[in-house]
Amino acid sequence: MTSIRQTIRSCGVTSILKASCLASILAAVIWGCGGSLSEAPPPPPGAIPAGEAIGSASIGGRVSFRGTPPERKPVNMTGEPSCARPGHGNLSEEVIVNADGTLRNTFVRVVSGLGDRVFAPPAEPAEMNQAGCVFAPHLLAVQSNQVIEFKSSDEILHNVRAEAESNRTFNVSMPGHGRTVRRFFSIPEMVTIRCDLHLWMRATIAVSGHPFFDVTGEDGRFDLTGLPAGTYDVEAWHEKYGTARETITLGEGEQVELEFEFGE
Image (tube, rainbow, N blue to C red; front, side, top):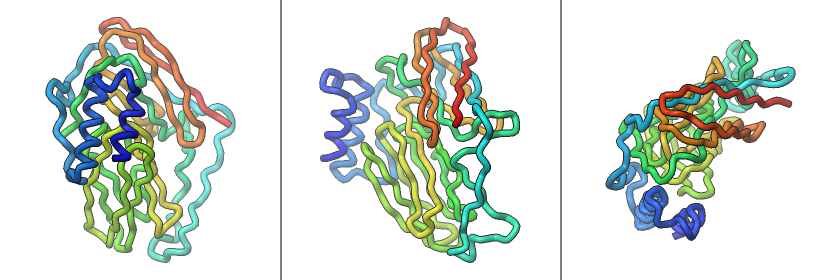
């Protein structure tokens, strides 16, 4: 029942009858009544199918780093001999500044302006792997109720612990190569993923209530396409530097570029 109460509080008393909130509450009820942990509930009637554009406008841009990029430090894996590979030391992923001064692993999403629209999640699952004693990717963005396949490519024992405030948490063992576990999150939030056996292993899953989100990569870019005309709040989130937000008004078919900046 805790997840149901948290969902209602996150929606607000005056808005619990909105379709978007009802969808989240329904998912919480299914969980609370013993629904499957690995198979997400079907989208509610009237949900916009996954991949269907609702407009022709788009928001793109880059996330830049301000100042001198911090040096990426080697991750000490000597406590697990099979993880420590001489000459292949893993580097910290908390802050990765690209060669062109852009910032990797920033989650960019629309936070308001979509109204009460409800979006069905993609049918294909997202994936988070344990490979070389790190979680890959370090930052995974998914849609609410999209199935995530957690797997391990390592031969040693790991576990996957999900730490969340609004979603149901879990802790599952990953005993060697080939193990796969399916889970999903129904409520938008940032979920921390850990391995208790190897304390340096940490990742984040960004859960969005709609498909208008992106994660910056080696070019620092993000692209949010298929939006209708309207006014939107767009937020960029970084695990160390927090959030930045911009408000933008789009005409139908308009393409606008934004620039977010983080730094020391």
